[in-house]
Image 1 (cartoon, helix red, strand yellow):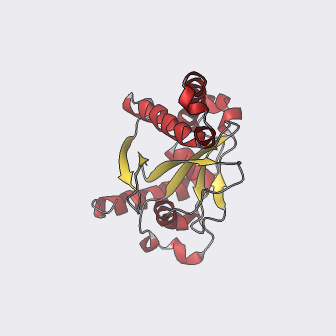
Image 2 (cartoon, helix red, strand yellow):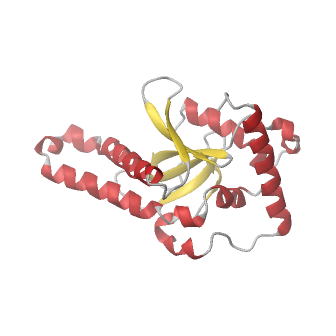
Length: 214
């Protein structure tokens, strides 16, 4: 089984995760300012739906980081499985990542077909022997950048379980660990490094062979 934390460190290292707190704080602050100055947003229905404005503001801030190559990854806007809108999909080296708001840090994002289908690709991080075979790889693993809903009290990158009931792994709260930019990696056992490198090689091979599927 590949260590999920080491995989996240290799796909979205600490030096990039350290950019996330400032982006989130800027997004939340912009929405707070907007709500203070726009009278129509003082209506109860608008206050109750403030999370939507935060969602758009966070997408904007993350897209700015991508456009300016501070986050040096490709990205695209992808239709939901039920085409009611689009979501920002970040294309990491051998995985994808989306953004989700959560009421509290222990929650898992509510069921959505696109997230569920993507999370099915996280099987290599589960302790089932049948997933040891590279032929079990059917898509790129999917990460989620999760953050608070109405109030910004937490943010982390997690690897969701396909059941939508739990996390396979999630990082510590990014709002409390910006200093990790000093070093991308803690000391990792050589066997764990080898396992991550092997998985990423297999994922890269799958992506090349299935270029039209992702």
